[in-house]
Amino acid sequence: MLTGMSVIQVRGLEKAYRELRVLRGVDLEVERGAIFALLGSNGAGKTTIVRILATLLRADAGTARVNGFDVAAQAADVRESISLTGQFAAVDEILTGRENLILIARLRHRKDPGAIADDLLKRFSLTEAGARRVGTYSGGMRRRLDIAMSLIGNPPVVFLDEPTAGLDPEARLEVWQAVKQLAQGGTTVLLTTQYLNEAEELADRIAILHQGRIVVDGTLAELKGLLPPAKVEYVEKQPTLEDVFLAVVGDAAAADQK
Image (cartoon, rainbow, N blue to C red):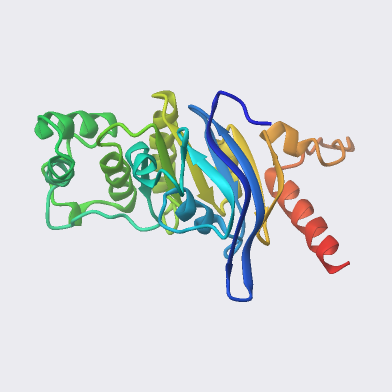
């Protein structure tokens, strides 16, 4: 059931490439200001969902609305409401961090691009590196700059598609902190990832996508509740999100074979 607080609403979404059915009737709903993690293996259809929601791809069936706008009929309004950060940082390594931000602010016709750049550098703890060429940045710094660039214009909805893919543990922690700051500022974040601990650390709600379908959707506590309670022997072991993921995907795969 849809609620007035939902900023992303998806119903019956389907997409196929010839004989390959990538999405098979996806339903999901994201509340305003929440971090929603779409968790799944490679090829599960996560990026396809993001591309449809970002108006980069048309669905074969179903409906999707972002910030109140239909992604098919009101694509321009959707694009005004969102920002998309893909799997690879879209930064210019020759320019400094500050110059990258100023460039995007000017391209988006924002007033006082220098002030915007300085504010975002401070917000993402990049002020000291702002005058350095991005080619000297670490992976985590580049990704944080990439996310900062995506926030120019204050979009209410941000899509992060595998934002920490290929990053080392320290860089991943830096990006996690940046994502948390987005939500604290009221931005709605839809995050795709295949890292179970990333979803566990960041998300208010988690949906597991398997073979083109959402097989489970809930809070971390609700997902852990799908498994039997922990048995107390010498130590108490609570189920992890990894336990839930493997159990749910295994059950779905068994059902598909029947």
